[in-house]
Length: 321
Image (cartoon, rainbow, N blue to C red; front, side):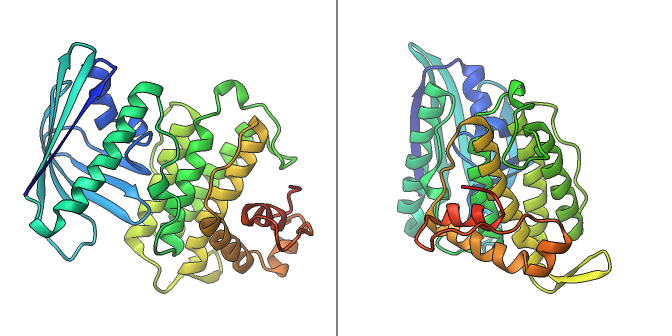
């Protein structure tokens, strides 16, 4: 079965090609995170939603004109690889992007069509406005665990970071010891440590804007944890921790610091109540009374049990709401 979609974008062919190939552009309409080796034979990995990761290889690439992918799903029991062909053609009024997804089993066609329809609508919004905004498909995964939550909260964080410029780095955050710039350094240090706990090493990050820098470090950390999985324990210095506990730190870091960055720059955090409630539960497991005292966490601030879950998470972390 074949699914086809087209979109007329009010941008040049080169800009349209960037939107479908460059990770910092893909994050604005298609993916939570993306890794792309843009060459014939190169591999790609797109986290489309917190629960859906597509992987494969690039079989053809003509910059500004054409991209052909061998397209499958990570950890799927179905080993099939579909073919996705994307062509780009300058036309009056902009650029026509046409996608042909071939090799789909008949019983999967409706779902694939729905998916590409959703994402092509977002592609049109991103081309017109620079960003399609938060994706409701990433907001509340059907199955929440430490890894799907990490992807969902990373999407939340990245949306906040897109609203921050280099001239904001000196602004104060709710953490008195951190400016926005120092909070970036802290978060990237945490991601280095969390990647190491999962048996990986954080590689170089781009020298682009704040969102690109943190997004790439976070992608590496989450991808390392997804390869490792949640079984067993990890070694944190002299202490052995359940892997589930260590992986849960990712979501707490992403969501609490999304609130910090947003507060510093006059933004609001868009997060589902389901995800915020889940992350609050993780934080309560991780930040025990003994750890709060020994690690220098501020005391939790009393707050109504009826307050929104994000507010309760922020208060639990010792920040005034």
